[in-house]
Image 1 (cartoon, rainbow, N blue to C red):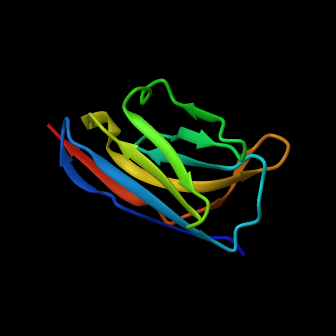
Image 2 (cartoon, one colour):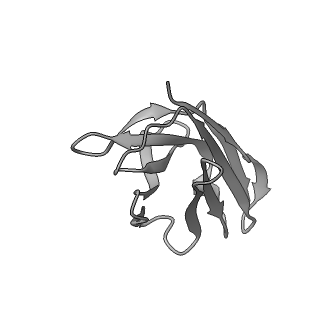
Length: 118
């Protein structure tokens, strides 16, 4: 059974930085890899960034140039370095294992709150 635990969220002023971590256990290797998603208040869940097993990385246009996804396979940990944060980055951030033919998120962490104030 996959178990994902996010940490590193918090409150920060606009322009600041945070680094999220996602510790994975019981993880079954998937070519699709993992990703970060977020849900802002009153909005739908959106994909933030993904990293596949071959280290292919993708970002949402809204975070390109500001966020950096990375993983430490030895520690089974996924990271999201978030710089130049904006108020619109506020939300609950989730890590997920992606799998299947369409690399959809299939296992989720509990989420960590990120609040960016002006």
